[in-house]
Image 1 (cartoon, one colour):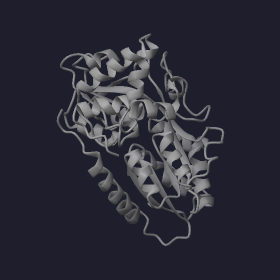
Image 2 (spheres, helix red, strand yellow; image 1 turned 90 degrees about the vertical axis):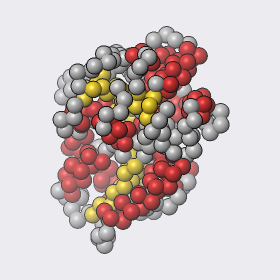
Image 3 (cartoon, helix red, strand yellow; image 1 turned 180 degrees about the vertical axis):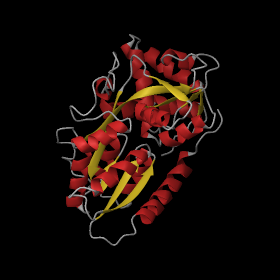
Length: 332
């Protein structure tokens, strides 16, 4: 497999980039300075959300620093000292890391949305016209089909993708051993593993691969930009839930106002316009986000604590072993 990312190098570059990104965006001396550290995908959404918040009475006079990158790298950077007032990650475990570090309250997810600010589903993005006639997960393991997905040891999106593919096999009635064999076959068709969902999408748009496993919101956003892509929502796929949390010790009052706005009907409407499934009832138009018939959650697979141990543990995880057998670095 070619075009492999070396996560250890990427992690260092991501940390340096994050620090520089925050410094570049947050030079204001305002006492209402807020620093947002997020995974790569919602950068385009925040380009609309932040000005909309600043136009409200709660957002008036607040200046923003922003940093975007692979979810795991961003979480580790904050744990290592990167300034943040609000964090928005792909995975709940990336927030849990900051709870354990004493940087986020243990009650961060005790609200009406359980700590989640957006939802999505895992989809398969294909070339315009779908030349390989890809209609579901089974097509991704056929001979000659080249698949793009990020590296699961830096990217939260990649872990969602893998669990979507695995869980779909279980939903179809296969045994765990058969679902694991499917993952083995899938990774043998993977031709590129970038550090993040955003980078993987750019690789696909540049011409690499026949199919990209990605967030639905990415597919919608890039279709709206005119990219020559289509996407397939598999019958069986996973509900993606993206967490947001306030970091302690910073400008928590302003941070709470910002999070409240992101969860308000006005904020959720902007999220929906950017392709994200709202977590607030009544925001999406009827039929705007169809529910796949076999939609399942990470909880149905045991939850992230069990999943991380079973699939992504440093030396014993089943996906770790697959990646190592293919010569892909699993360093974080």
